[in-house]
Length: 109
Image 1 (cartoon, rainbow, N blue to C red):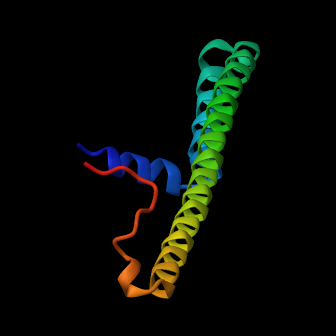
Image 2 (image 1 turned 30 degrees about the vertical axis):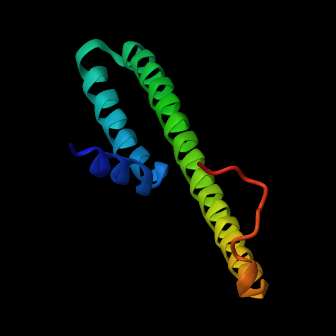
Image 3 (image 1 turned 180 degrees about the vertical axis):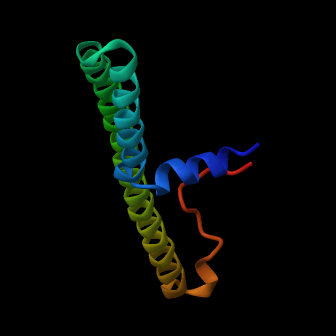
């Protein structure tokens, strides 16, 4: 139901904006875990967290790049279609009106 909202938020927000809260949460986690279980274990947890965040940001960045490529391709395809329509109209306008019923090579039932 709200897929359009989810997609617009995911694809319109740059990946680095998503990374900022993740870095803040990682720093807070590092401080909290270091006070509870020690610095060595906190660093291990921080490395694991960094790997997960970097993987997620890389995936998000790739999805956004693919989305932008698709949007550019759609715009190119739409422009090609508009040109084909203009060419067809121009060609039909150049034909004599009496020849509109001539055989064009397609069978119609």
